[in-house]
Image (cartoon, rainbow, N blue to C red):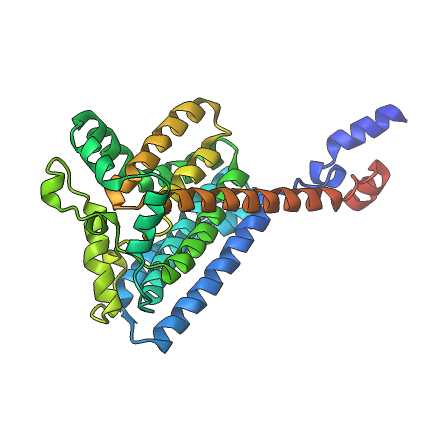
Length: 341
């Protein structure tokens, strides 16, 4: 009897003997899609209720490419040959792009609230902590090697994101990759909301610095904010072009948020831990220089990142535990045989 049971189990499809493994990251991916839909609705309402308009060509092009990746990824996730390495590698870039264009676009609408600027208060917080932005700028300006390291790491923010959302699923850490994308969205929602209440253009002008005080480098990202944010607040910029979106967030620093999120996201990849942590530590140190951020911006960004990590990791573990508890028992061989017949 035992031999016949073993022979029968070998002849039956494995799906009839053991239930398929459920990937908890699918629940997080669905949550990401729901959040994207909510943000798209909010963006549409914001455009309708304000004086903003959008250039449709860019949004349709970028959104169309993301939709193709998303549809192919969803097709694989629902197929009988579903592979997390395949569908996560397709879905995560699509969701990341959609989150970024929607939330940065919403940042334009939020910035138009034109609440009182807070540079003086943020600078006072720095000084209360004993941190001197002017002295830091002079220190970095006199060290070409440090400037080169700062430029490399600060400009790597998008490259690191692309690298991680591809590497994590390919190495089997698709749930961590999904948590990273959700964390990106949650943290950017938080920073956009806080930045609306505490608007600022940056620390250089507040500290009384100009280009002659740092002739060896030019903080391009800071100048982009300095150029774009006043135009939004004054009502001059009222057309949102996805190809011309500029940074409008100062407090908290989103570079600081991502530096912490990246270290956490890459931690499961052992060979990437130490170099990744060192690289992002330098990026964190470069953030005041590259983005003209107050030190308190960086501190606030790191705190938001840590809170986001706790939240999304807890959610991922809870979904995984719930599905394990609800997992049906394997079918008995006799039942499986009857089903096969």
